Image 1 (spheres, rainbow, N blue to C red):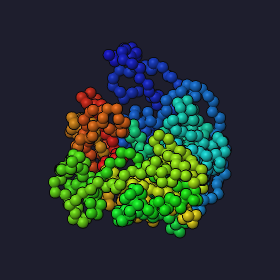
Image 2: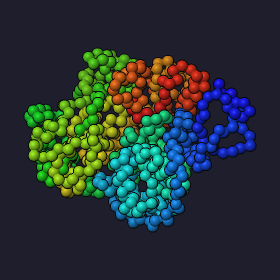
Image 3: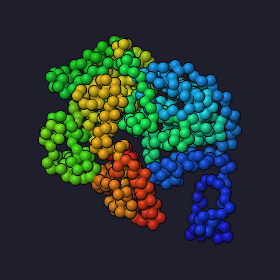
Image 4: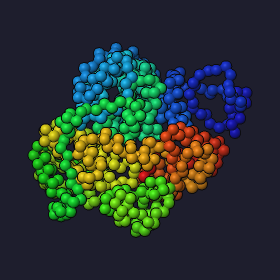
Length: 627
């Protein structure tokens, strides 16, 4: 039992909590129990962090307790007992340096140094200078007497910004917060930030809630990387959390990437942030030459049919190896192709909700929508009138072994899931990498070869084109500029929008066009979506209990593929062997907060009732993968 007698709680187990404030009276009508123990006098949860956690919980239809688990690291007594010194004096304001390459770059730094709060979406030029540019923005903010927070998607980019900050500012000016730092070190660094001994923080998504004193600037790099979305409830995204912090603390905001997400384009279009870009001449001077190999060339190419690699690619790789290392990007395993028109490659979409159509079984037959579940028995392409479908993938995966046989005198190195390389030398070598695992080459790569473009463009995902372009640009940005002979060959149909954007090096234009198309079709981020997943009974009960906004549209539910025992479980996937369903709830712009509030209330009511299937009911606001 959980009875309270004479101020003491009988039965049950002790529960950890935070002491927020002491008040004379309570608005709780039930019996109160005395605190068993105050484990630490350290005030780890101040009003600012608590307010932010509540705002994030409301934004993502989550509980405050879940957000606090993400925001406050586990206590470590040894780290807490260590003294922290006074903060170092503010550095001097930096020179603009390579920020002069951007139209309003020098003005952005000047505004930071003078205590201003500019908000910008920054399209970084290709090359290695982005880390130093972030470090200069941090230095300018520190020079104004304020703090700065930089969040990056992985440990490798964190190490580059960490190194750039040490070079600019020396030791002791910033802390590094990453989830894999170990409990003692992580808590020690976090305490140094909370106590005000350090005014700047660099880290992965674990750092997005870092309690920086007098926050003056928040930075997120490469917001399209899926690592920025937390895989624990309520699944907050770094970009959205830092937007909240910028608005709440009235501080500067910098979203930087070599590419550009649709969400970033929406921030600019809405006027919330200003664009920070270089002119076209500067872009052309910094980017490599991009060449394409499409289906027509592959069909005519005897070498491509015999060796599964186009003649142009062989020639460019051979020429590149004379001058330095060559990068070969190969998609990861598990890219499942999406159905598209065999004639014009337009993705096959549902006529009712515009979701992706998929075959109901491996042998073909009837199609059904991956969103609303409706069957489609008479599909035809609305663009060209074609009736034939195909999976958007061409050719087999090229492997390091095949390339090694083709170039027997050249060393072949691989970077991927088993081992990720950080850097490679400038000597001639073939470097085969999966997207996101590309090592940095000393002096840049001579050439990059982007293989199996269809495998990336054909994923059944709303973001497939945007994500393919981001990964292509991420690899191509490591290649020498066109003046130094840098060349990129992408094996994908040249008429497709992401491929054209890569050739022109115009990620912003691609994002703007995607945003307009999504607005027309009612897709996120223009509309807002929530995914409700779990057992069929749990999904039905939750949707029945939720007082959804009047303009909400429920798509589905549709079955989720069963997770096989012994295989890796994806984020959000059902436990092995369990049959789950997923429904999507879509609302127009302006109703997102009402949708989150309705689902949060329904979850809380079910939990209070202690109904069946509670473990299986899951809500995710703005899911990354909706098909």
